[in-house]
Length: 116
Image (tube, rainbow, N blue to C red; front, side, top):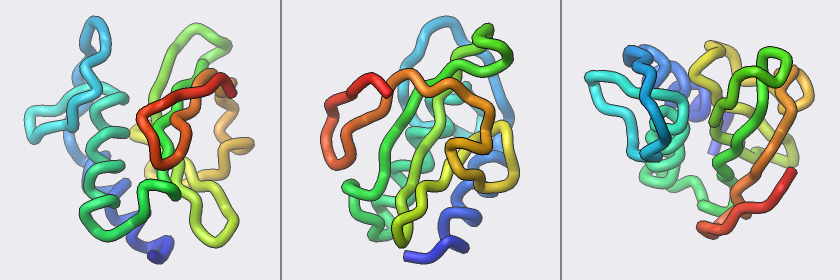
C-alpha cells in the first residue's frame, strides 16, 4: 500500500464525468458518470480489489460550501495519515485541509456509520 496507489485511483475516477442525481444510490460510477457518492464507492471498491484492507478505508459525508452542499468522499488511512479522495480535487488532502464540516463516517471495516 503506497500513496501513489491512492493518487492513481483518485485520478482515474475523477476523469469520469460528474452527473447530478436526485437522491443517493451509492453505486460505483460508470463511464457515463455519476455523482459524488458513486465516485467514493468506486474508489473504495477499486482499492479493496487492489488489496487495501477494508479497515483502512471509510466512506464519509460532509457539508461544504458554507453548509449549503452535501458531499461524499472516501477516506484512506496510510501509515497513520488520513487522506481524502475527493472528486472535487485532483490532490489528496488531509481532512482538516478540505474546509468540509464532517457529518457521518463509515466505521472502518463495517457497513455501520457514526456521526463525526
